[in-house]
Length: 258
Image 1: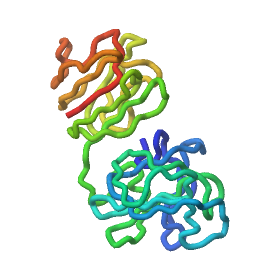
Image 2 (image 1 turned 120 degrees about the vertical axis):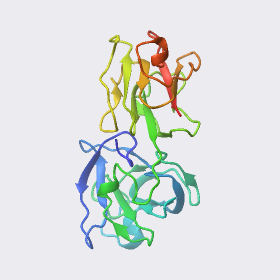
Image 3 (image 1 turned 135 degrees about the vertical axis):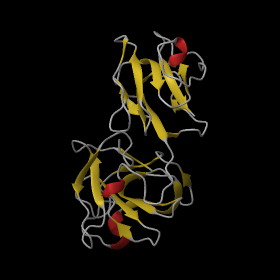
Image 4 (image 1 turned 60 degrees about the horizontal axis):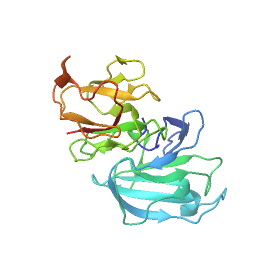
């Protein structure tokens, strides 16, 4: 999944070219629009709003509505041509937080996201290596997220061990992404365990089918039942009742990993 698009995969429509186009232009795969999320945690240092479609504009006006974030490692990301902006200057944002929606404000020819990465000297560098990866000096926090089967989109990333959970009470989940853990889930509708996955190249689940069991190697985890409560923590994987989180036949609406 993308580190800058809310629920889609990156599709680059205009790549990075030094001294020519020091950014990448993105849409959601298959030329679709999407909401924009913060690549990493940080502080909003600049916001421009109230801009319209303005082909040929220069300077900051060419960005249209945009957001610039300074991250905890000293690097910056910039998100331009936005239709909507959901954050304010000096606001603290977290990785995966929805911050705006792509548009065609400023010097844009079609709806897309203009995405920049800048180093600690505020100099633009090639952002493509970081579309699905950490910034160069970023201390990686392991994250995970869940797919809401009712709202039909991926919920925001949650950091392992921060005391949060991935899910939306009352809405069963149909998929789980994790950064590094080997995991699998039990498809309640089909009645069997789906294949193992090991990183964000794939997700565990079958979107649209509720999950009623989870197994994760090398982690401590628990799940919350729809219209129920949190089940006990699990820290192993085997064929016993203590070797997975869940109860067959009861949909899961949240997961927590610590």
